[in-house]
Amino acid sequence: MRRQLRTGAAVRETFVAPKKHAQRRKRRRRRPGGDLHIPLLVKILGAPVYLPMKLVMDISRELHQHAERAVTDEGAVREKLLELQVLYELDEIDEAEYERREAELMARLREIREAQRSASDEEVDEE
Image 1 (cartoon, rainbow, N blue to C red):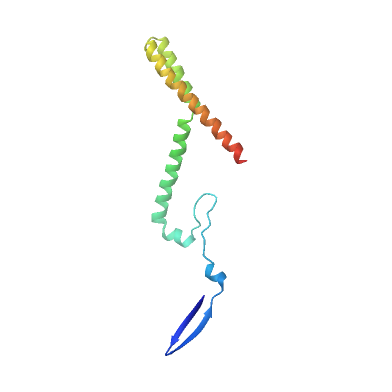
Image 2 (image 1 turned 120 degrees about the horizontal axis):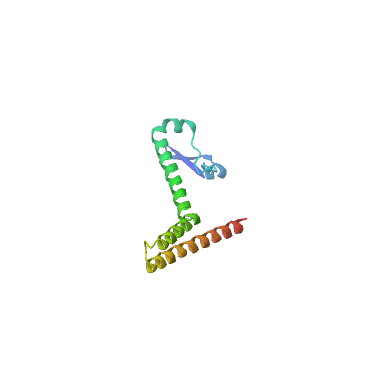
């Protein structure tokens, strides 16, 4: 890359920048935790903004993980199946209602097991 300076009527060539310096750009590296590397001074000065945002992100991540575990929990579906069976045996629900709710819960149980199998298959493929 050549730069030219004009002084009066004469054009004079000046510094030729090496290509390495022209192409070099600072890149921010990601840490294993996912946070960008932020200098200490920026963290201290930005703490009133950064910390509440980080707290909200951490809480939302925890809520997401908790919800995911609740949705894919096989034990909870089995408990509901047992409760349903007890309600039927105590004649609190009729046979049609029992069969309908049992079919829903069994379908949900199959979905959970399929999701667990596909997740374990993905883990094996990654290795």
